[in-house]
Length: 256
Ligand code: PEP
Image 1: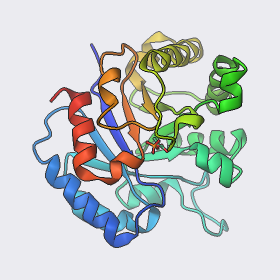
Image 2: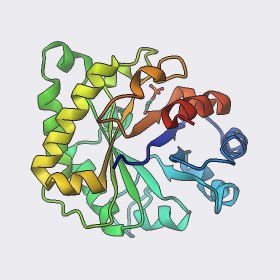
Image 3: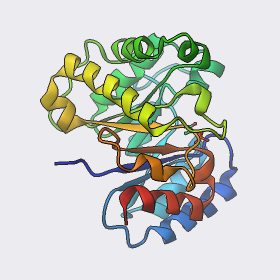
């Protein structure tokens, strides 16, 4: 049986509080009759408490854009998995390429964050992986994907009801206006699936993992992706900042 598709909005640091709440209300209204698939929005930290009020008991869920790996303590500026749960989050993005680039997040940090989130049990991690332009041009993509998955998830036990989302985001495609060719996404998703199968077994991957694509998806190019065998959803950045555009993308993916 195919998994329900998930469409996740990454609002990055693009909106202030008022803009975030306005967009959340518009999205809530658009998806009020949602009866299939999953919709998740990921606003900035300061909006989470208010977003929780707007989306309480709503089919649209929300998540954070980052998390720290400790539960409590002298970690100035950080936010723990428990705090995210307290604010109503059900999802959290981990290891986005912008954090790897600007905040120097490395494999060790990402691995610790995933471990802490899975230990917490109430959050679903959205783990971002993907090759940069140089790696792509020199035919290293397959190895990069294999390596990033190994570094992120090695030694982690997945229990029965834990969900994990792997977002394949070729770095060169993010925010570029050019999405990858759907056939290439399918190929990369297969590599990811085979690697995960090797690490965790076919049954666990089938039941606990989703593999989604992110990178310059719009309502104009999303059609090419809907028939891919190994695509369980989308992570949408720029195009999710407009409620109508995001709604159109979701409708196409969900074939609603
Ligand atoms: C992202 O950064 O996660 C993303 C998918 O961005 P965009 O859709 O703007 O390329």
